[in-house]
Length: 244
Image (cartoon, rainbow, N blue to C red):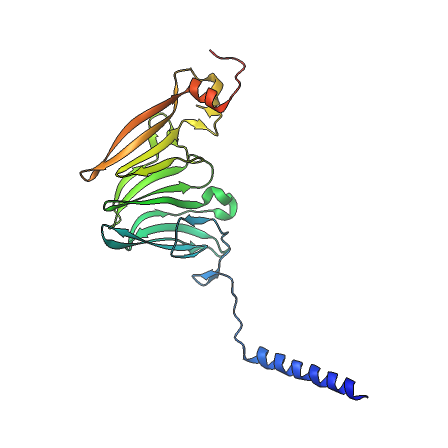
């Protein structure tokens, strides 16, 4: 055996020795996300919170300055099943719970059970935000909470007769102490009261804008602009074969 082959064998033996030594001393661990002693299978996006300071697929910590004081908000999945999916979700501010839900079934319902917290805004001594329960559309609630977890404002049905937040477009703006919300009675820009929007009367109010003005420790609500069916149809470029 020539010298070159001996050198090659020696190099291979050295590499094997190093690998065996490394394998015998390294502490191997499962890098997959775990909680409550279980391996977690929740998809990224099942819990969405805007602007987290600390975050994982099942947890978010967010810090805001409220009236000169630090307010810590936490959002998390918990009560994990053996299949790695959560049964519960909760949200807290400074340790005080303001939202909690059991009976989640993300593994079967998918995005319909996703929890989405967005549009955070500090308004005097309150934290205002929106909570969207799944991705079906028109499932958003407007919230305002204080630093003790008290719910000062909770609005899902913005007006009577199924007027809900139009959460599949830009639906909220803040200006000074005023919140403006865009709401609709039309599902997916097509269906109105279970029928085609073409069956609506011209003067039916199908969408509207609402303001929530925070003054003297409470919110004053006002409808500021309405969109009637005829205007809606024209704006959307909908062709109706027959109109009343």
